[in-house]
Length: 186
Image (cartoon, rainbow, N blue to C red; front, side, top):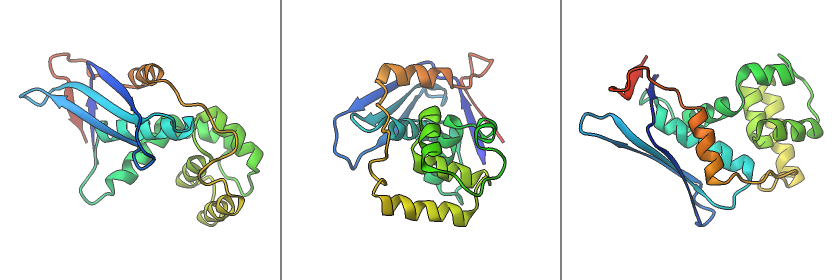
C-alpha cells in the first residue's frame, strides 16, 4: 500500500444538513503539478459525536492513503480512521494484550475515552487481535439483540466544524519541503 503524506495548506471541514443516507465525503484541490492546495472533508450535521469522528477520520484516510487496487478502499479508510482515533498502543494500554470478556459498562467508558462507537471499538479490538473473531461476532449479535446498533448508550455530542478543523490540523503529517507539498512513500 502506498501512503501519501501531504502538507495541507488549508484543511476545511464542512457540515451539511442532509438526510441520513449521507455520512461524509472528502475532496482535494491540486495545482497543475499535482501539489495539494487544499483539502475538504464534509460531514452530516446532527449525527452522534462518535459516528461523526470516525466518519471524518475515515474521510481523511481517503485523502492521505492510496491503497492498492486489490484492497477494499472503504475498509482501508475505516481502519485508518479507527487507528487515528484509537492508536494500537493506547488501546492495548487500556484493554490489555488479550481479552476473553468485556462488559458493556467498560465499553461505554472506553467509548467516552476514545470518542468512538462501541461497534467501532469492538472492531478495533478484533483487528488488533485483543479479542477473537468469535467474541467479536457474539458482541455484534448482542448489540442487535439489545437494540443499540443505531442508537448506542451514552451517545456523544457531535463536534462543531471548528473543533474538527483543529482536530484535523493537529493530526496532519507534514512534509519538510514546502515547495513540494505532496509526496508518496511506500
